[in-house]
Image 1: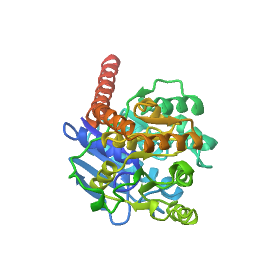
Image 2 (image 1 turned 180 degrees about the vertical axis):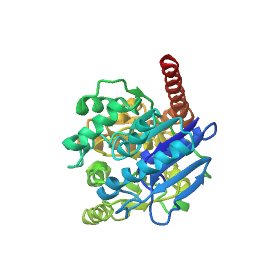
Image 3 (image 1 turned 45 degrees about the vertical axis):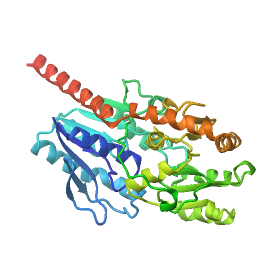
Image 4 (image 1 turned 180 degrees about the horizontal axis):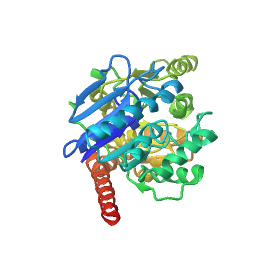
Amino acid sequence: MNILTFNYEYPPIGGGGGVVHALIAEELARRHRVFVVTSAAKGLPRREERAGTTILRVPVIGRQDMSAASLTSMLTYPPGAWVLGGRLIRRERIDIVHSHFAVPTGPGSLPPSLVLRVPHVLSLHGGDIYDPSKRLSPHRLPIVRSAVRWTLRRSAAVVAQSKNTRENARRWYGHRGPIELIPLGIRQPTVPAVSRAELGLPESAFLGITVGRLVKRKALDVLIRALTSQGLAGVHLIVVGDGPERSTLEALGTELGLGERLRFAGRVSEERKWQLLQAADAYLSTTMHEGFGLVYLEAMAAGIPVVTFDHGGQVDFLREGETGYVVPAGDVEQLVSAIAKLVANPAEKKRMGETNRQLAPRHNIEECAARYEELFSRLLQAQRGNAKARS
């Protein structure tokens, strides 16, 4: 197949949605031709060949931060994507268009696919249809809600990565059509073992880790404040990632007197991220909502328990008391109690970590890509069948 994929964010810019898009695209590129249309950013080439995929970047206005998109950059992505997408569909004889994120990607990928009659597959990632931390979340804006409804309705297939995302598509947008459920997957690299000392981390302290863009939805201020609780007095936290909230969070840590107990690693390489995960005792998160939570799978593969809230797609694969602790959203007291249990019970921490290490291989990118491949083939067969019926 000739597959044209769209995403306003694609590594090295953006977060988890772009990362999993790249993993799926690279896996499909083993057997098919795969093109990616994404946003341009300073220092990145307009065209790039990577891991069998062809990446093309369209100009956008106002993209200053590699970690987070501005409103202007999101609004200016669709026109360029529309034009380039139309050219590629004709020139490369594209069979399938695959769009990641209902907005802002959908309005750029759907029009050329409709005009040129190529099946359009829409993957919902969660935050593109529901983000409780944002005043301008799509589900709160009538015009954007209409754009999402149109994209959902006119796509040949809609895919959600979790039951929660599927429910939000129905609840907030009234979508009554079928929604495929294809969980995400990871590719775990083999990285050399590195000691805490080599990483500059405390060797004997209980070390929590959290990974992701430093944006309001992650509610890291809640986690940082939780470190001041009496039961967590000896707990250290390393924050991996960058974003617009970093300076505020660093100031909060200083204000609370956390000192060396709180460390910000910033953006790191994939290898270093896995080394830090493997060096930690537990993955900790106070996020308001996750469409899926790819990093939870990475933490599981690294062999550490996960402690987080229960609002989002993570409840599809995290199990209370087995993979760690999943506590009611916003209940900081229970969250602190769960972390304290791990601190006090190393054997329980080890048992949960081993459980996660065994479960993680079930959630691999090969299976995720194969599910998409099967969906694409089914849509093309249906299209050919309809064409025969008309003739």
